[in-house]
Length: 81
Ligand code: SF4
Image 1 (tube, rainbow, N blue to C red):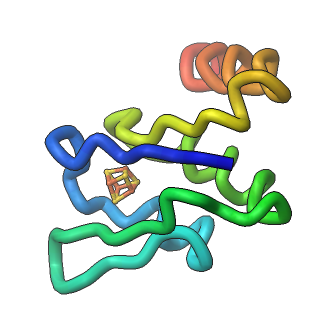
Image 2 (cartoon, protein in one colour; image 1 turned 45 degrees about the vertical axis):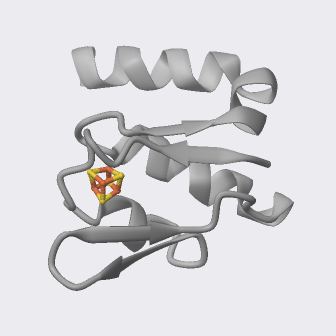
């Protein structure tokens, strides 16, 4: 699946690198590198990374179609949790 990180938004919190280390990695203190074409088996980790990013910098193509309700419940969870 394809993903994009808005590096203007990204604050280098490294939540994504922690949750999906095969897709995201930190280079130095603040710069993030990532694989824009993540493996299918990374889907779940990727979904967690997307949900965990404090600034919603990660957009993943493949996740939106298949997991629309997941991203909505992630929004709801940050509200009511
Ligand atoms: S979790 Fe978000 S802000 Fe943190 S490094 Fe990843 S993309 Fe950047």
